[in-house]
Length: 103
Image 1 (cartoon, rainbow, N blue to C red):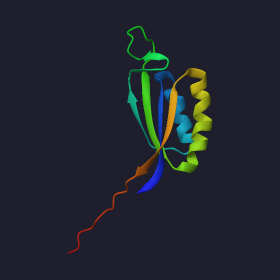
Image 2 (cartoon, rainbow, N blue to C red):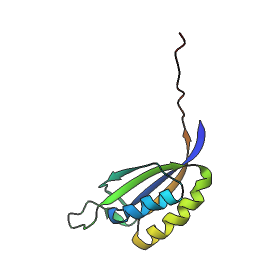
Image 3 (cartoon, rainbow, N blue to C red):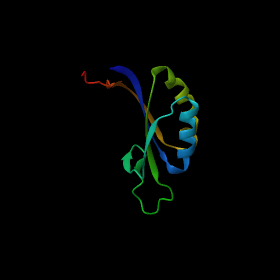
């Protein structure tokens, strides 16, 4: 198992392109996007109001610990300007081994 970082970003869908471009610029090339999420937090409910003009998205990405500083440097200004949340946590990557059956 290898220690890595998990990055979770909640933002309106309008900013998704900027976020994905920012992750790529920081060297994070693989991520998952879950579109049209809703929930509630410190700022109240998000995404569950019919009158909302924008949907919210959830981005999950994983990177090496040394990449986190670059990610935060790029993502923070986007979230500060347009809103959203970013969380970084320590996780362990389980690598699988390709086994070849002996003959």
